[in-house]
Image (tube, rainbow, N blue to C red; front, side):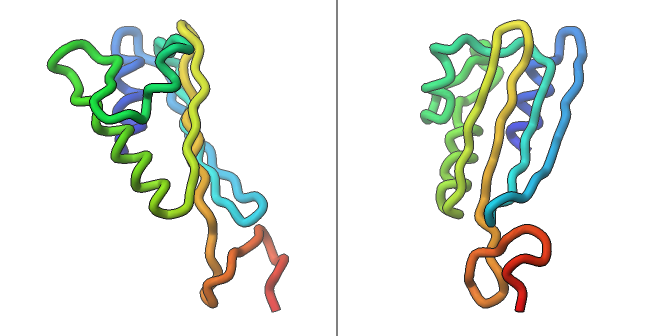
Amino acid sequence: MNIIINAADAMAGDGGTLTIKTNMKDGMAEVSFTDSGCGMPKEHLSKLFAPFFTTKETGKGTGLGLAISYGIIQSHNGEIDVESEVGKGSTFRIRLPIEKQNGGLGKSGEEGKG
């Protein structure tokens, strides 16, 4: 939810498009969020998941949303990354392992069933 809210904020001035895609590969579920917002400079990307870092103006954000999201994803043995370009928007990708009922990691489709 935090990523969607951030995307909406990044597109607030002129509107835009948010595309959400899902994929499953190598026992991982992937959800990507691509917005057509203002984008971020490269120097911000390495700080995005640090507590209290925000690109929003004073009083508009706490800088905790992505830090909390990062922690939740990590606690589920997942990964999150971001690509962004100023003036073109951002893409956040979340990858989480898929578990079978017996606790093993799953694969897409019918592979591994039996």
